[in-house]
Figure: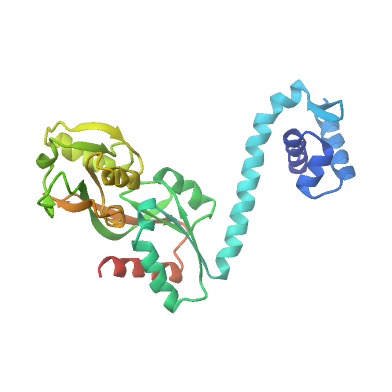
Length: 293
């Protein structure tokens, strides 16, 4: 099957008729019919049967579709990559962010950056570690900002800054409102667990297990701001990154550093074979500057 055959077959299979497929592809109905007939002639079997005005896939078409769908998605990925490469030449920066960075750090840095780069377009997407590699390969983003990400093949990591994990607690749990706490002080408290949330969850879990401490944990989350909002409802305490902690403070909660401290790295990730543009480097510098104000 040629690429055009795949595109037409996929469209008819998904929409159920030549008319709908033609509308979806923005081509004429006769051209869709012609390509379909040519594909069936080359394959040597029918792909559809007409039943009450609809085209019903044959058994052979159903067997073929899974493989065709894989190729179709690859074609779409190539088109997306090509479009994003074209856009990158027009002063665009496409960034993938860990959600926690959207509370304070990156918005402030973007505001400062735009003062000196008013004509640069910035597109920000939130994503998690497991989504970064595909987004970079498809050129959907120029770089990603992630917390202590694992090594990825073909991806270069650059340290932007080092930060720390913090305890968020309800004021009524600790009326003295300490500014620094150790893990032992949390033993009798309900912990909002983030163990399955990625690298930061691993850091917290390792600290607790290394000290052979048993924690009460009946609520687990994978998103840090949800943990912080549960603390605001006085459901327990949590240990999360300082950006989410500071961005979700309210009159009922306080934050404290851990003693000894638990540090993590904010890394910028980009394709090894694609150097960052100067504008991207300037934005990363601005993020570093804002973090150290």
